[in-house]
Amino acid sequence: MKKTITASILIASIALTGSLFAQKAAPKGKAAEKQQTMCPVMGGEVDKNVYVDYKGKRVYFCCTSCVEEFNKNPEKYMNKMRKEGIILENSPGDAKAPKRQDHKGHKH
Image (cartoon, rainbow, N blue to C red; front, side):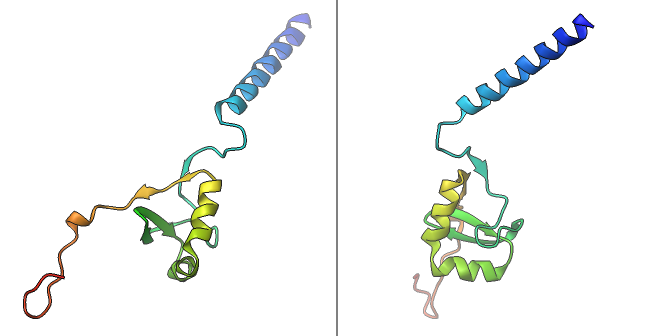
């Protein structure tokens, strides 16, 4: 019986210590950093085929309606994601994008 109680106390102490350590690992008042998996507008799971590149960052959405809503006030949603500790992917470089040409062959 004493061994069971001692083991229970030991397990509880280890769990409490781990919990305290986890709280100290993240800076106080700052959300843990995480990848974007949820739509910043509606909160649904993102579709990696629906996105906007904004100020060098790629923002994913659940649907095209959310893209339209995001474009009305992008900083509102960017601030929301920053506060939640969401780390956005960098937008791919423009060097890979094909250059447009007008009908006379001049580059834009």
